[in-house]
Length: 148
Image (cartoon, rainbow, N blue to C red; front, side):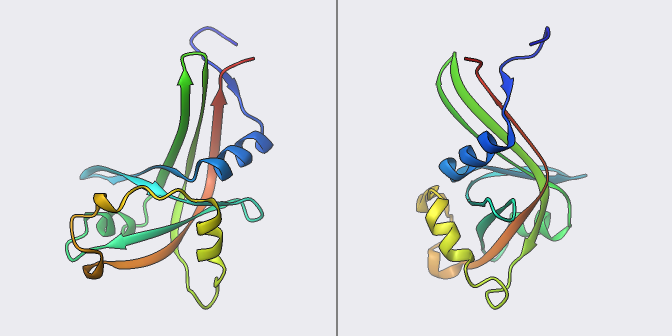
């Protein structure tokens, strides 16, 4: 490990296994107005190397304005047990809405691998929200972990 770096790079198998295990992270997006980050449950689709997310939108959803602009997003997730026992993965890519007709299995994959963030994060009653399925098409993924 060179000066200024920490941990070791995770290989593709380690990253895929970690993403399947985690199921929750922070989805970050932004544009010239600034940035926006939210806790986000996800299911990692190892076969197609993408993440499945169920996004909720209220009447004045700030999230919708960032997603609608077509900008890149990042999803980060980590596990920290101690200063010498941690792993983290950062994904960069773009979000694309999924059709329930074209991708009927998305809810099952999400249920199998996601961890629910919390219902308490919603500022409106659930019945007032619209829920839509999205895929995060991965352009770049980077994982690091503590060295053995």
